[in-house]
Amino acid sequence: MAAVALTVYQGLAGDHNGRALVGARALGARLEARLGVTATVVSEPAPVLDTHWDVELASALGELRLLAATIDTALAQGARPVSALTRCATAMATLPVVARHHPDVCVVWFDAHTDLNTPLTTPTGYLGGMALAGAAGLWNTQLGSGPTISQVILVGTREVDPTEQAVIDAHHIPIVSVDGDVATALVHAIAGRPVYVHLDCDVLDPDIVPTDYAADRGMTISELRAACAAIAQGTVVGLEVAELEGAWHDGGSLVPPDPILEAIEPLLARLAG
Ligand SMILES: NC(=[NH2+])NCCC[C@H](N)C(=O)O
Image (cartoon, rainbow, N blue to C red; front, side, top):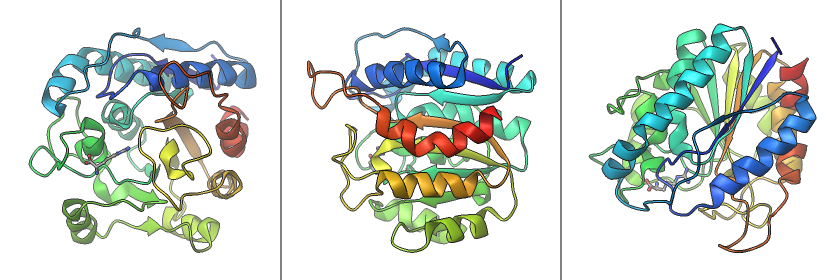
């Protein structure tokens, strides 16, 4: 059994377009080479729906359950999961499984957004915007819940809906701003707990890799790499990358995922070691 279990997700998860399916495949191929393992590919591409969260979730539920089962098997075998996912909504499947195997886990959520909306508060109907709230049990995704909100650290957050700000305030969720000393703030907030990393690529400046949402004033690759290196000083139980699109527009040429590989290398070295 390899130390690392690599998963590539190819099912739907509230996608607006098909480009994250391409991005996850490209990243998965590079991770296979880097880690020297063969990826388990979950599901296969289908035309995107690009519709309201409830229709998206009903349609993706079976595929998301397969993803959860794949991560569950990896963790049960003592492996550390590394996953090339598509959309943030996939975290509704992965996080509860990780929290079940690692009840004391701390989830470091790199994302320009907090994804703390619920069916009652979503301003857009976008499933991904409800992902972290669902995993944390603020609404019932039918995929189980975990970790609790007190186990979450937000990093690089800069587009927050008023409804999400209320959740942050009510639960005192720590936010590590990219303006300060990220490494020190992260290590302080993690406080010795084992870490599972969720990386939404829109935490980066929008011109680095293609993502569905573009939020200005993001992290650079070296800032993200430094944050990953700080996390890698402690115990790391797994890593997932989402919202990496494979092209700048439909029909565009493949954009290599090299900047992401460079940023997450400290975590890969730690997970594979
Ligand atoms: N992970 C993301 N890209 N999330 C975008 C969420 C945008 C907005 N807050 C919403 O609820 O729809």
